[in-house]
Image 1 (cartoon, one colour):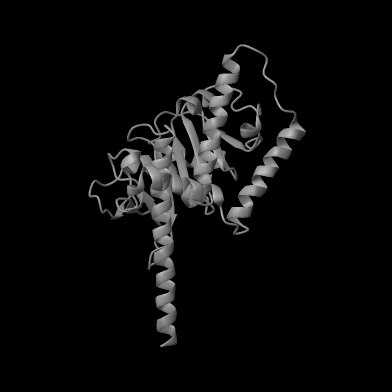
Image 2 (tube, helix red, strand yellow; image 1 turned 120 degrees about the vertical axis):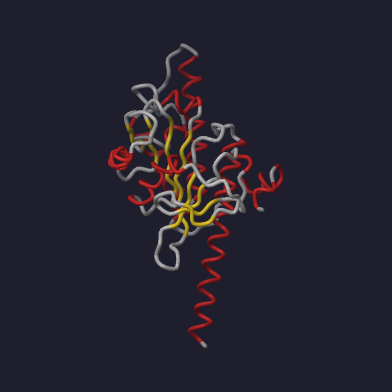
Length: 264
């Protein structure tokens, strides 16, 4: 009887965890769309689910063909590490090729609860210059010496490229895919989204600053590194310390006001 009750509690906890991940991933798609960071039906945000009953790896991805602002917690597709469909409420399948990079990162980096890939004008612009992101301001200083790079090899359909992407990424959470876009890893969906939005602001600010034709002020090493460590401590307080995340809570309230259907 005791074992049965314990089993029910575990199942309930897993069910609640899955529901929260589905909600957060749907929110991520909606927020990226709201920020103008989506690219039609292309690019993806994936989230790791608790392992299945037989230990199988499970992930969530958007249904094929839906815009980011059409993704909801209910229509997210459950897939395995190969992109094969396990559960598909919407019935359109997924873009398995689009999961190529994500699957490699998830399987190599067990800290990656969420993998977020974007093609934004500012992000592609910064990924297309040799210098990459410069520490010009508080936003960009958080990424100082914390960005990995991967050279462009064409549209990412080559399975062999996955190994090179993982090797280039190393232990970092942020990568500039040269001439392509950005890749971000979060220990939670919330962290991935916050990193993505801050990186996008940083890229936009650099494009604007350098576009003025004046002399940019690059932060010195010690100031940039200090700022980056301050950001890291804040992120760690949520992801490791268990502190409530008021920024993510605010973003969910934002969606509840303008796109409440994401929860359903």
